Image 1 (cartoon, rainbow, N blue to C red):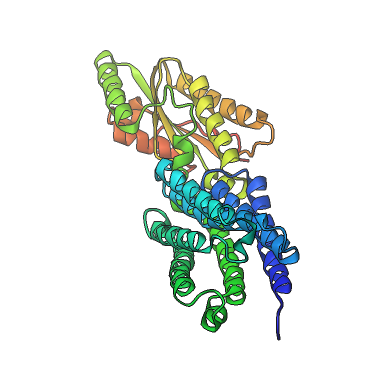
Image 2: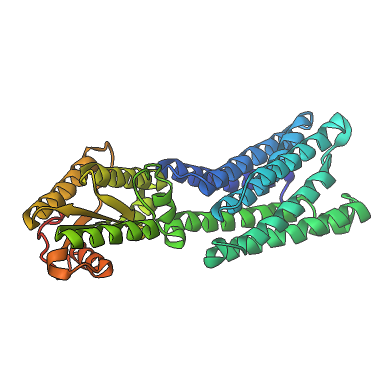
Amino acid sequence: MNLDLLSLQVMTALVVIVSGVIYIIGTVIRRDEGSSRLWSVAFLSGTVCVIAYLIWAADRHAWWAIAVGNATFVGVTGALWLGCRAYNGRRMRWSAVLSVTGIVAAFVGVIAQGPDGGDWAGAVAMFLALAVFGAVGCVECLRGELFATRTAWALAIVLGLQCVYFTVRTVGFVVWGPESAVFQAWLGTIPMSFLVVTFTIVTLVATSVLRAGRTQVRGVEAIVRNTGVDVGVMAFESFTAAARSVLTRAQWRHELVAVFAVRIDDLDQISTAFGSEVARGVAETWRSGVRRHAPAAARIGQDGVNGLVAVTVVATAAEARTVATRIAQGVFEELRAVPGSVIPDVGVGLALSDTLGSDLETLMAAARADSAGREPVAHAADGLDPSRP
């Protein structure tokens, strides 16, 4: 079957546009950010690229479309690379500058040749930029957190093959010329179009899986760490030092100390299903709610990625149970009041020093067990989890 240039461009454009729309809509619905947004820029650039080349295939006077197509083609791989760096938590400034430089070089390479540049205007600049970004993108996929998931390996293979292909294409363009039979058979528009279709499909699948599985790879730690409401929440090491001081002084005065463990479940599932912005809103409300409803003198600390722990002196066990109930109900009501929020499973556990002594680790273990709904070790308040039936 013989395919003319216009038919081939239409086929390629259809695959790229549909893939781009699917990914971009998914990103908008999930309200994702970071790497997902950069990968959306890559798919958007791909859509603009194929439309520009389609315009050139239909109208040979629209030479400007080559400049747009070449620049956005480079932008596809540049944005993919930036998305991979964002996923791995790398610094973005110099890499963003390099990406923009490659895009501008591809655009200027066509403009400099003007209307007489023909089909291959600015080709060498574009080929080299695509080879470079393919190489650095492949390397980034094999580093950091991306390397921890095998899905990224597929993306690394695609970007690595792109680097090899465009390196060979550059050499073939310079040595044989774009009109030679060898170049047309192996490095021309037709084989390139099939490569683009394959590249697009694999990239769509890989980035979609990475986006959906981001929480499983990174956990909810980034969401918790970036809630922006951590004033008053101590790091775990600082909290344990402060809590031991409270326990020691309370033991001197024969005062009762209560340790509260507040856990939030399902944050990773919420991030996967509804996006990181929704999960961040839930985490913000949870953490601020604990601080708001805990006693003013309580020390509050981070306890893993989905837990907070608090310690305070109370007059009686009944008062401690009242405080625990107030925290549980207060956090639950605040979560329910957030418009469009998803209510996770929130549990509050309580441990008292009059039954377990003044060992902090023992008290925290008992409070955690109570918050998780296991058999309480201490005299803890039952039914403190208002989201449980």
